[in-house]
Length: 179
Image (cartoon, rainbow, N blue to C red):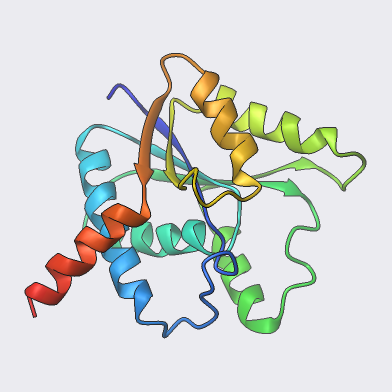
């Protein structure tokens, strides 16, 4: 892997049916994320690029913050699609939004929504300006991520690390066997 900058994308908490920070599935998901990120960091990634989405991206941000406190060195960028991203979120999610806004680099792709073409252009920008992606996605469980997923598949020499439900099941089995 010659990746220096890695885009982080994946399912949102609502797509996974996770509505509480105390959901027991989060321990498994975060353990899987940590295992993957340690390998990714050992491969030389120095920048992680987020888009400010709750769910997989936020949990990855939490794990990255933990890894940084353990001594790993890297930078985190958040490139929000719109300047008003998250402004309608509840108070608890506003606190999470603030954590995205405290990363090393913050930018907004657009001031506001104007047309549906912005979504395709945004995905293209993210893929064109990163060396690879860490994606929690399964093509059999489609969401709007399918557009980004297909764009990633078309790009040559773009590193892809995918977290799947099958991998999470393996982590869960090892987790329960180790207790």
